[in-house]
Image 1 (cartoon, rainbow, N blue to C red):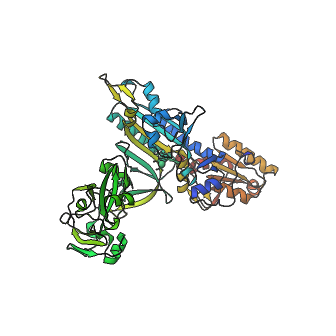
Image 2: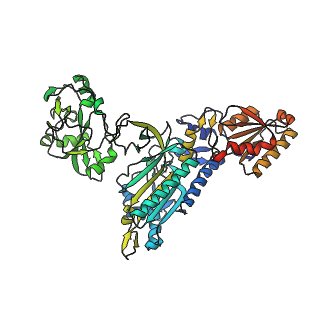
Image 3: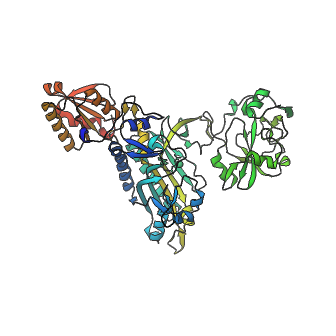
Length: 577
Ligand code: ATP
Ligand code: MG
């Protein structure tokens, strides 16, 4: 591509109000332009890189036996009503009506559409398994679109859906996708972890996320140093190193006045104790029932697990008003001793796994401005129901081992998920099995954010001068910077080199602008072209080429005949070396 004929509006200054590197560099480097919140124009340079990511994804999906389709972006409400997601999904689902007043939405995902397609076309186990995928636009009216393509409202996703006759088949389809994902992210040059994820209440049985480790990541990844455990914070479980718990100040049950204390911090500072010596009692509403959840005072609750723990569809914290309706005890004075006697409306009390039987705790005395100290777990208060409900802290102990857990930031670039029969049952998508019986399809779904993957690659590969993408997804592989393109000699050498490298299959940007060489170098660094070749009077006179690899400091001088092998060895195995 000749720069003078290319749309590449690079910017000198950093764009305002941008928080992370990939967003800043994609704007500054002329890859994208924001049209509305979370909605972007993709410029030629950005599209080049995105297409390279897509090509890798497509190749690996095809290799894994998946078939490409293209499903509509505009989807009729009726399908979403079949699964209950028309009303069940919140405002992320953008709904609208056509001229006849019929309801539609912009597709945030395609489970409904694909299940309808398979329901209509596959009748027998003999036609299974099948895996269909597409690389296509999605729309989610995200509450907080930000970070450019990382969390857009309109974005491109590769989504695949597998259909099998049974659990065993689903497991094979899932493993094939897992392998494909490993190949894809390795080929994109990403350092990632695949982590266990929560399958939520969709009814799925297994789910893994592919996390690119980066400080700007919105997700937290819990893992061991040894690498034998990695989970999304929502799924992660932990124990505590008992020896590291604070020594107990109070070991005998007594009631103490805590005037004005409303929070755990207030109680701790009044009694000079650590929050780990306290337990707090939270009131939640599980569907229509009130429940109390008891956990150490220093811990936060992992709300994602609550529907599973309480076997309920929807679990939310009870509002202050609701608590006031069932008891006159103020919120900060609630405690586990005789709780259900004080508040009969509470149907269940569940204790977190970190409330250790035998240890003594401080807790509300179910009386305004009083607390119990030295309440022995299992003795002074009964522990009947126990569940893992706390969010893991860094430094916790791995369950069933002596290893400490660490927490890193991660960007979720991909997600694989065993859906089971949730959608096929809801949508009555059945096939005939070998015994001639009607059975619902066993489904899996598998997503990769194309733009998010590129953004994550930039997060992991940049420096103060700009992007430093690995050659396989960099927009161009080679830049030719011509010192003075108007000079006949330089023009001839540059044009020949340009034609020659293109004929060898390289993706080349010829900077033929009538501007200073400094500006041209700056742009080549900004957009992260892996190899930069200078064509100028000095090199021409000496019959050599001056080359620089983007991720190395020094310039090198080589014979023109060696340029091809020079580039190929810098790109060995498709990776930068
Ligand atoms: P998140 O928790 O980040 O919102 P999600 O769980 O909603 O992600 P999935 O529904 O599993 O995401 O979608 C599959 C993939 O699509 C994600 O792994 C991610 O790469 C991409 N993706 C999801 N939401 C967005 C978005 N708003 N912008 C860009 N990519 C996205
Ligand atoms: Mg989301």
